[in-house]
Image 1 (cartoon, rainbow, N blue to C red):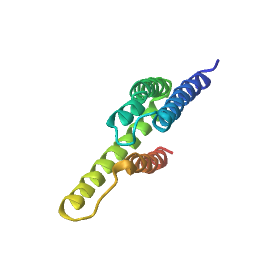
Image 2 (image 1 turned 120 degrees about the vertical axis):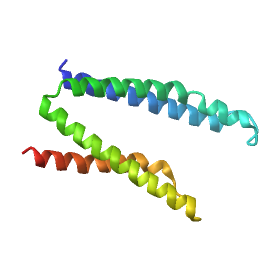
Image 3 (image 1 turned 180 degrees about the horizontal axis):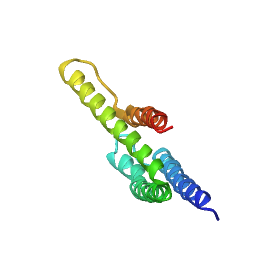
Length: 133
């Protein structure tokens, strides 16, 4: 099995396990014979999520590290610049939005922060790749 297929297989297996855990926890929350006001219902529904999230996190971190180890020096440098741009942009935007939320009645959902980080990474990647062409 080639290296890229092995990494893709690791990503695919870990995400599939995570999705199975999500479906099981959803089914557990729906069909659990507890009253809707019982707090144990939510605790039991979320229980399978912790090991699944830990497994996915460890597997994705390992696959990402192996992918970075297989890159040449220029590709690593481009990825480092993209990640640095993403980290700085996301931190600055999150801090600014936190101040907006602190000083106003505006409520901000922070579930979009990974999307913002991905967008900043894409901009940083394009910028760094053009720089080294």
